[in-house]
Image (cartoon, rainbow, N blue to C red; front, top):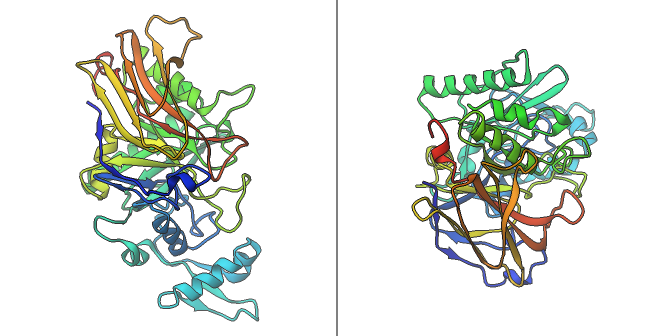
Length: 416
């Protein structure tokens, strides 16, 4: 059963802020709830800043955990970047700030005036102890396994990896996803540690369809929101939006494959830390809030595997409770100044015609919304939308939202 409860202490000045209340200007204390981002990039791959500066940003903006998931690397070994290359990337100021703020640990060789200066990228195991505080802030080792089928990119995040997982390849999109999932599972079982895989940005270069997402029933998580401006979050005339893909995939999973639905998470996929704007992959756009026993990788992953989390771009939820006995899904929303909220309960009915996938079953205004399941639903999920705009939008008019996980499907699947 999915059961969410927490007590919240709210910063009193939230109503003075022009955007969503759950950002750096507003701090909240949550009993057993932890906010974090599981998809981030640094100079170890195609990000434009140093890991220590990125971690500092997230820590100082109210996050409790972070995974820097660079492409096909676990941020180990020796890697040096040329100052000239960093400067041409628009990160010269970041490099100067890094060398100043982390002078005690930063390593430099060569001569800047001669064009030979290089800066060492600090491995994860070396910068991790600089930031972690028990119960307050956690860094999780991660990798973005960047694979492809033909010209279609297929990227998966492996959270809490211990070793690099090489892209496995395959003869189809489904096979590529499946083989990489198995490689993640193999590492976790071999090393006796939980490693959580999730499918990243399915609409990036239109790499993955909803039908393919449905077919890989071993996959349990994907990104309902990704803050990168190039991942086609809203789809186009020939491709559905990512949220509609979620409903298509889950309808097929439950009705055709009798498999558990995908859970949705929100991430930044941040690459750009020097210049802001809708064309940049900025931090602070999407995150997950997880109800966990404690702030450890094992507890966070265990909670996510039971669906005890929600995804957000700014709306904070005070309570989400699914009661299977009463057949109710209840959502309580944390007040945000004068913001008004609409909760839409989305689902697919078992006897619905083919076109009625992921329809709005009910819509409720206010801080509390309850949906009574009738038994006809394959699943029900809630999306809460504020009338406030997000602080760092990816598209014009983007509003703050939160997504709960689908419920009411349990009796229809082979196993949970």
